[in-house]
Amino acid sequence: MIDIAVLAVQGAFEEHIKHLKKHGVNGFELRQKSDLDRPFDGLILPGGESTVMGKLLHQLKMFEPLREKIRQGLPVFGTCAGLILLAKTIEKDDTVHFGVMDITVRRNGYGRQLGSFRRTAPMSPLGEIPMVFIRAPYIVSVSGKTEVLATIDERIVAAREGNMLVTSFHPELTDNFSVHRYFLDTMVRPHLSD
Ligand code: GLN
Image 1 (cartoon, rainbow, N blue to C red):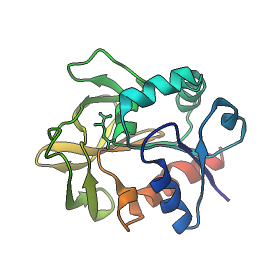
Image 2 (image 1 turned 30 degrees about the vertical axis):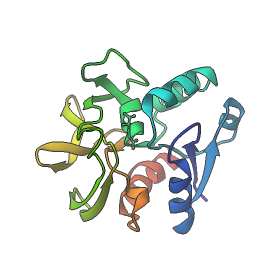
Image 3 (image 1 turned 180 degrees about the vertical axis):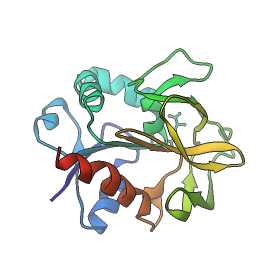
């Protein structure tokens, strides 16, 4: 059985856990430092408020151990605020959270008020999938080995680099499991046999 830890200090973590459970995958909440003692095979950084999550990660002393695990190759999937946490650069902002992925991100890229919408668009290699955006960031540019997986109106909304997958939308708020399955199949399962 695969165990996926979902960061649960703030934001939309319950939706990820429900989404995983519905598809027969065990997800559990990472609420405090001691939760990191339990072994897990992959990590989800959910949507929410990246600034608040960043602060809480430091206060709870979870920031350094999590960054170390990600740097060492733990498979990680960041949605929305989770994407911002992984980015090396946040536009017009000196803040860097984990700073591990070669992407430059624009927070609240669709505006704060009219920022929530739903679209169906192709994501490589999954084909058309439903995408829910909530005050979403988008990726302005990628560099290094980062691969773009989905673009809407020339804005990058999904990408991967090594052990890291990010989407600026929320697949856990749809009935479609293909993005999570892609994370499990291409990142988590291959990592199990390392
Ligand atoms: N706007 C939020 C941020 O900047 C992200 C929104 C979300 O995760 N739904 O952190």
